Image (tube, rainbow, N blue to C red; front, side):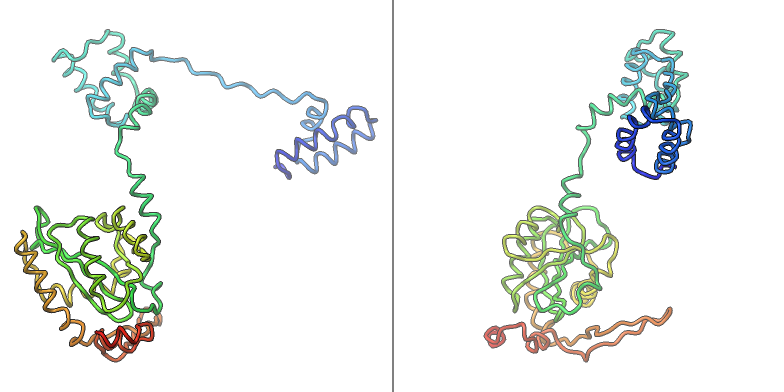
Length: 352
């Protein structure tokens, strides 16, 4: 095994090769000892290199090409006709697909080409279709922009919240589908403040990114504290250019939970049941009239939920083996927590 890098070996050879060639037998022996210790080369191999005669490695013998361009062209036609399946699936389909295309006049093969097609392996099919795949690669649906947008939004878990000041909210959507996701139905946008538990809801006619931004802006103007950050799940109704641009323009910190980890949004998930489902239930709501009625319900119940409904807030969670112990603060209303917070201006406390 070599003891120095390849670049260092080249520099070492260039430095000692001339001294080795002009040196005495004794000097050559000493140079070989040192050279072999540094490079890890066998002594015979080192002699060949320093004499300027590196061993010639046998060249790779090319494989004889069994299939010509006619076979490749036929494979491309069959591949397109099969909706561009992989080589293994196309191999299994050839005995059925080739006779069917010939019978209906869509394919006319030379007997020799046809025999080769039936004998070709799945691996050879994939190799022969490499060029066709490269041509059609640009026609595939690309998700790089969405993945890039998602990766630009920082991930925040439940444990990352620590003790934030009022204004950092978790956002989620609740479906009023009646258990059937087919068709169009009303949704609820739910925002829950981490520090106080203050919860505001807005009705959406459909789940759409632009409507989410409009509802968020409407709720933001009605909040009794300045909105500082929004934490969402990974749905496209949240992770889109409209919401990212809105948060950037308003100076809001946008974060997201981990995919399939609902506990990362435990604050708002709890309010989905305690507020939305308790008020609205699980029935199906459709149409503009239902959305307007739901909006009036949220407007009427807003102060009741936040001013007259005390709730518990987790203070500490510790694990002892398999047992988890939780300690809660004394129950308070979201309004009381906001009034006790030093982060809320006194003027704002007097206005609300």
